[in-house]
Length: 172
Length: 170
Image (cartoon, rainbow over all chains, first blue to last red; front, side, top):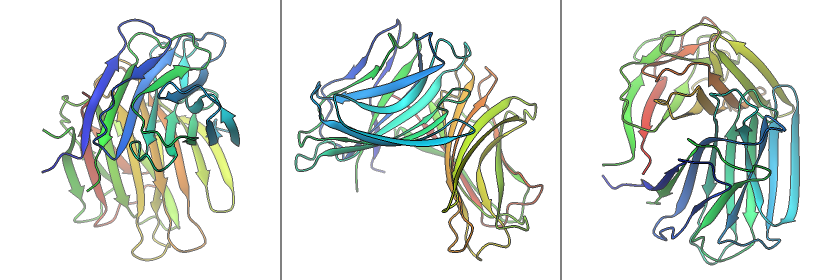
């Protein structure tokens, strides 16, 4: 059976870092999926935003729309011309000690040089302010995604033990 | 070896209140469950539950976001199981089954276990739901078994199916 969902790389943090980058992404897949399970060192709040940048582009080339619920209320937000795109929420050091939160980022047609790149992501960070979130984001570039960086907005760091796994998916 | 492997599929040959995957291999990084169900519950939809390792204690906090086609709502609870989605009930359009995908990262780890699910119960009628759930099992044990249960004390009907996948990181 042909392999269609392949592991590309995985990083489990042995020490705290302020960002995680996947470089030299193979251009042989159709889509990418990032799975993260982790926490940040922020102490001012029990959760915070996760952002991404493609190909180190910090220009105002990102936009997003989201849908977020916390167990009692629901909000939807959108923003354009951002220098990075929010794609999820993550528990912090103010969360329960053993609670890491889950977020996954789907990057569609990442190697297609004729289209802007869209992503769809989901977060499950139970017990926090933004427990359930779905994001649709756009990178206004036709460049193939060859690298991307994940960073906590306020951080300062992802804590030890946080894991980020990248998979490639091939269409038939 | 593929990294996204089918561990087991269970398709009900007769009605059952629950389905259990036991002796889950501890060799993957994450688990994913894909569910197609209908219930004998006498309503258009009911609740679908998830439990780990046979634990029915009040150890499962979860939050839910749900849209019905006309309204959105969010609620939270801590219970003896996680409500992962909806079943299609016996009064809903015939032959329609709800669908649920559940992702469980780091199921062998020593941290509390996160659960993320998305469910849809579209049935070409008045009532339908799309549901997203963030859940947690407050337990550091590795997940060695999991059960999907009808949350309305009814039965999941014949031809309901449950596929468990294991996913390995690089």
